[in-house]
Figure 1: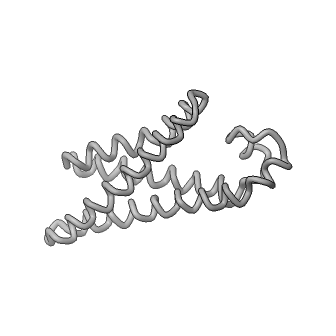
Figure 2: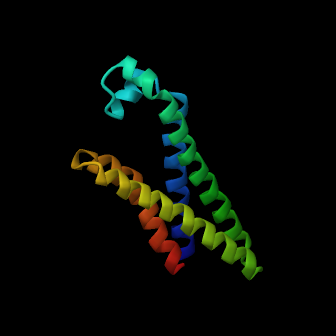
Figure 3: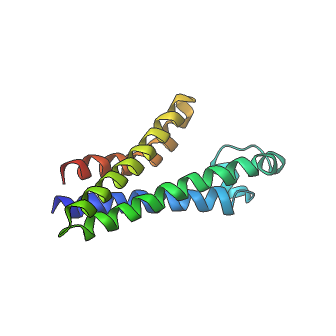
Length: 132
């Protein structure tokens, strides 16, 4: 039961980071998106587009790593090596997501809400995976 809950939260964290990828790397220059990230105008969105594009891919890669880790973890019920590899990969990716949220928070309290959005699901998943 705990393993199922852990994989659900890890998968939700991965989905959230795929969504962040889409916003940063695909939709960045849309006003509803850049406003969400605190960008002040279209010119600033165009200027920061390469940075957002790059940052979005970081989020995508963490999400992919988490999903691969989940698959290996679940597939490893009969193979302890696969299970250990999946566990390590999931923990690394979720831990990196949490660390990124903490780094975001160090840039100012105005980023508390985005840091909580970005870091809560991975933190819950990380703790649950540890005990699963």
